[in-house]
Amino acid sequence: MMILLKLAKMSQSDFEKYWQTAVVDYANEKVKAGAWPTDHAKDNAKQEFEKLVPDGLATPGHYFYDIVASNTKVGTVWLAERSADSKEAFLYDIQISPAYQGQGFGTKTLQLIDEEAAHLGFKKIALHAFGNNKRAIHVYEKDGFEITDVWMAKKVSEIK
Image (cartoon, rainbow, N blue to C red; front, side):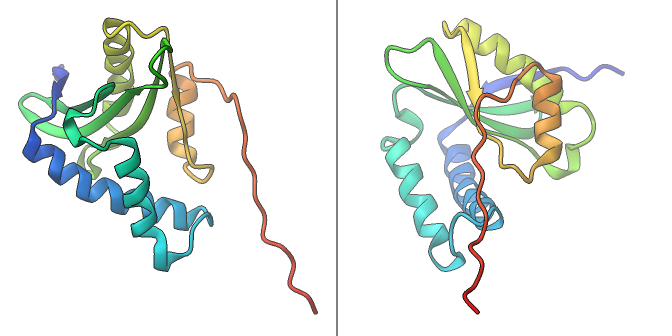
């Protein structure tokens, strides 16, 4: 059975729910990656998001979608202009709900994002993946994304 998958513009109520979970998820990923201490992570994430999207869902150049399969929401997408004069989109977030992971929805969603980016006039899509998210990196590479930058970090040895 073929499942029809589509991107639907996110409603204000869905955006508010998404916003709450996205801030927490991003904070947790930054802590897991060793970039932020736990005690300030949520505040840091909230500040970064508010800088990026000051007008919420109505922020110009930012596109928020629900991923819908046969009338069921299975995830979310946040796509944006890299800069006002750029033909490059930045994929800030793609989330497939846990119950729908491992079923090809991520791969199909990337194809839909590609189509939507072309429709919006973009020529290229960039994204960031946390280094410890091997599964996502594999899916992105399989879809044609190439690593263009690598940031690395290590903890400094303690003085003995």
